[in-house]
Image (cartoon, rainbow, N blue to C red; front, side, top):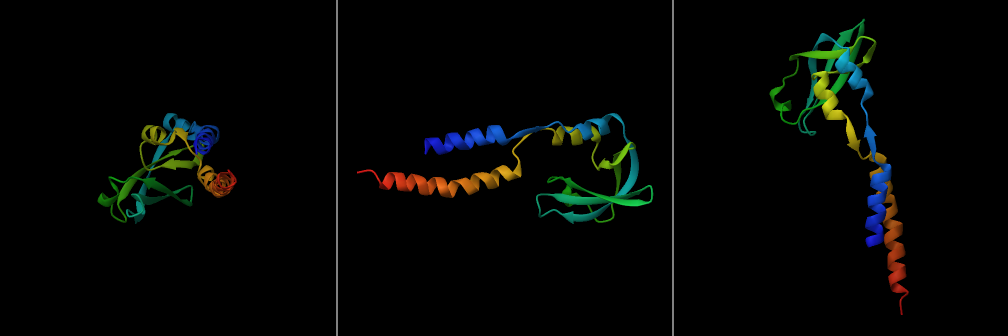
Length: 135
């Protein structure tokens, strides 16, 4: 069991990564604003809502994770969207500095959780066989 836990801890350390959020760092230094609106509310889904705005003749959309403020939003509410003029696909409906603080840092990739789950069954079977073969 200790080996399994040590292996899991090692996998987390090796498989985790640091998100530098370079795009958001650039957005916080060079941004413009445009009017947008709340397009969809999924407050039951961990406080997620979606916004949309139009820029250069193209409709763009993005998600916001805001568990505390989601229920205060209404469809069609006007919001301010921050975007990078040099890279308009980089946009957020929260202040760029706030978005950077929320998204940069250490995180464990989703694929790692599936990998650990896939390893758990063979490891537990191997441990049961090993335990069963002792005299």
